[in-house]
Image (cartoon, rainbow, N blue to C red):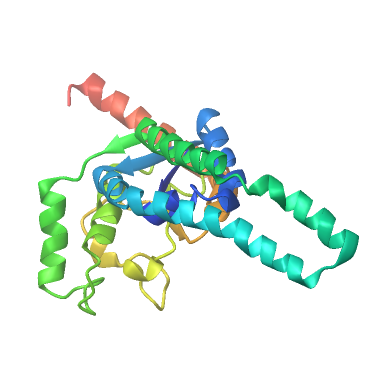
Length: 242
């Protein structure tokens, strides 16, 4: 299965009704073992820190939806206006909808914790700090991208290039400039220094990630042959006592 990781903002967006279909698709693909979702301690901490504001924002949006819809009735008249007001009156009761929004946030949090969870290491933190101290990408513009950079380093180090899919890791973030080269659109090489090479794809839309995830690599036969050759060599070394 393809490894997928979502930055904190994408998890927050999933709490909105606009992304409900994507939320259902994400859960379905995980439950069917089509994808493995990786979450680390930094993402969980950022989620926890932003949860209160997320709930506040969802509540405010719900409260404003009915008011905005009601204002549109000013452009209608007669029976049309009467029917329209009757229809939107179903949205006037905010209590149920706010409770539903809170339940969604809780559901997402439980789901996150059910995913493959990893922790950042002291070595990884020092590696990113060293990049920042020396103003190396993605810190060349003095922007505080520490958490974004650490998330990328941590997850990429965890992932091994052992899956016969088009990508070993798909990372979804709507802030790609925080960790990618503006010209190549690829993750800064500094962030991946010293790691085993993986097929990494970063996208800004979760929908795109879920479409890309099931794609098998074009050179699958060559990949399989190489894996079999390596396994044969390992067995031969074992027999030789190496």
